[in-house]
Length: 345
Ligand SMILES: C=CC1=C(C)c2cc3[nH]c(cc4nc(cc5[nH]c(cc1n2)c(C)c5CCC(=O)O)C(CCC(=O)O)=C4C)c(C)c3C=C
Ligand SMILES: [Fe+2]
Ligand SMILES: [Fe+2]
Image 1 (cartoon, protein in one colour):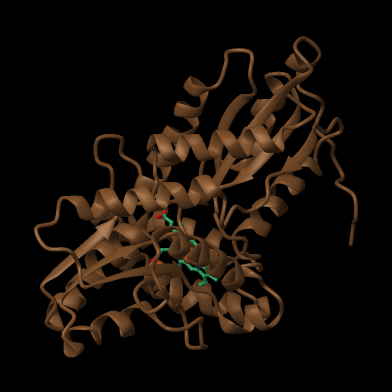
Image 2 (cartoon, helix red, strand yellow):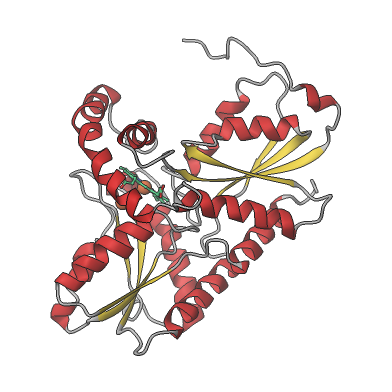
């Protein structure tokens, strides 16, 4: 087993011309190139082969993944992506919003400020390709910002892995910083509170229950030390305090269970479909585990969960959007970048 890369890439030619600049790389999860079977399969294969995401012996997991899972799942996921696809730009919403966040940050920052770029952990543009582009543009100091409000080894840590793996092939590496998670950053909480007010403002009758649904995680990972649910709790404590609500009035649940083992509970779908029986027929759902709307929020909540709630006797289902490319999101990212570039910019 080699512990050093065998071929180190030559430093980019432009580097010597304009060195000394600071770069910022925003990174979100990823997305297939299209909704076609082959593209969705390739994307899911990369994602679900990440050993941070699936902690199962690859000798057991890979045959299962490359066999039954990747034969069937891309059809279901492809149909879901087709329902939410941004047809105008021919890309997924997560990609659209991540790019928009980067573009709006560029406009918001001074011309001599840091160079802003964006990448996806799985799919394109890859972290390695954008780190190289930043370096070629003269950035010898780069801040990586994983766009996950709450830390998890399955999301944040694997972004960091990919960034450092890209550096492994460079003879001349940039200095690298990683921004921490921001579960209860005052500007995140403020933005969420404002999005709730805006989301409910247009309704004829207020919902009987407001519920926060976070992406789930196998319980096994939490028992092994993943701090994700503690970070979700920090978001909820701060948001409830900000709104003057109790855990009963504003509960949290976990969505997106995958496979047979136990995930974080309560499960969003079970909790929501039980509500009409208890007389709760108008609900609003917010998803504070995501900075941008994606298949998990727009389709799993906005489409599937809505249908399940209505089929169970629900009457009104309101999905509150993520901060996406709103001024609140840009304000938050500016603050995080400013804070984490201290001493650099
Ligand atoms: C199977 C294991 C998975 C774990 C563990 C997991 C953790 C995790 N994921 C997010 C955020 C996102 N996940 C997204 C999609 C997605 N996630 C999984 C599986 C796990 N996630 C799958 C199979 C998929 C693909 C979608 C599908 O086929 O149904 C996305 C959206 C991507 C998009 O393009 O829209 C996000 C964002 C978090 C925050 C998290 C743990 C904390
Ligand atoms: Fe996920
Ligand atoms: Fe999901």
